[in-house]
Image (cartoon, rainbow, N blue to C red; front, side, top):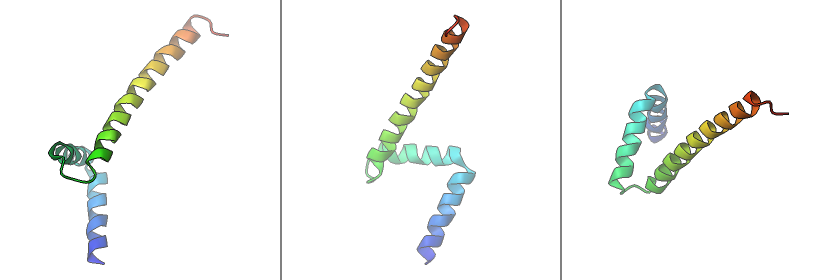
Length: 70
């Protein structure tokens, strides 16, 4: 039971301090010794691709409506 409490405290800390949690994940991925490293790396790539996609869609929608999309 104490193990579950420690995990819960870790989750609460991560939610309260997201920047610190991101830095900790980055350090963990750089070391490459954790079983979570591939998931962390894929999550970072997916986040970057989704950010680029959102920007491209915003530009496309803006151009569509500015130039009279019907």
